[in-house]
Length: 256
Image (tube, rainbow, N blue to C red):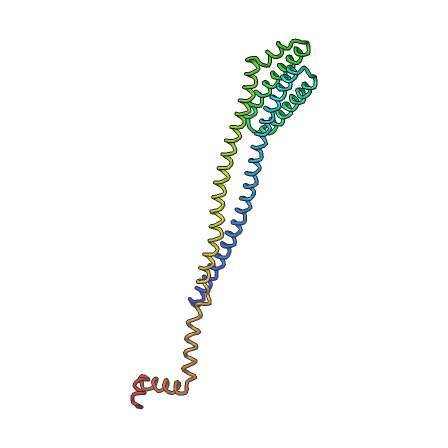
């Protein structure tokens, strides 16, 4: 087999390999884009999760304060209607605590804080119940002293500290998750850019490997020989040169 044909077959194999590599890289870019979209969706979900945990903890604190405010209003007005929000506020605080426990089920540190909140809420509910009983029995000063005591302030302060700790932990977790998501986006963006740019470079190189380019010199030579043979004097001059060994220039000079 002529060397030219062997080289042409080699170039064809290289061109097919380049096409396969290019297709694989484009497919990898598509997969990277899909992964990026999934991770972006997960990052958005974690943001919503953090906001929900923080809102739940904040609502728990507000409900606890509302319960105490209901007792204070009753002590000031002696109107039984002012006590109605107390029980509903305590129930709301308990409901938010259960929700908070469910939202932080995957975090042992947050679960420990929820446990402390549970103990503090039970103590606060018991204190408020004693204050209501004292107030209904006419012992207004004793009930007021109970909710203004050092123990009461410590209970509220403890609840507030646990809520703030939950807030801080969720903010830190969200920052870490966003940092990892940003790094992943950069990596995937680089991979996508490389996977899309590489096929363009490979396709440009594959154009240089066109085996048909090897046939162009032969076509040119055959075309030149055809033009010489087709000329009126080309055949005779060539025959004369072949017989006497003289060049076309000499023949032309002799004729002149």
